[in-house]
Image 1: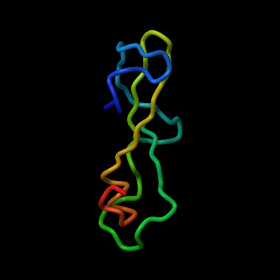
Image 2: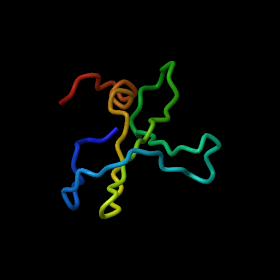
Image 3: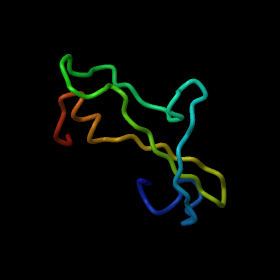
Image 4: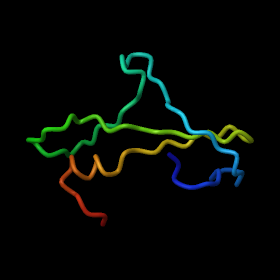
Length: 79
């Protein structure tokens, strides 16, 4: 899952998607937790973070699950 088809650092199109691991997270994934989430929700507060790496310059881009973040914060529509 990438925001675009080009590296934002060098412009290369040689990107590879992957997962950034956190050593203390039992699932092997890192998550983002929004500060201002709704009080009552059936979802966990963990928002998945995806990544892609440029195979030419090594730049790693992190991308969060926007739909879940909007749902948790009560901002279901883009601003």
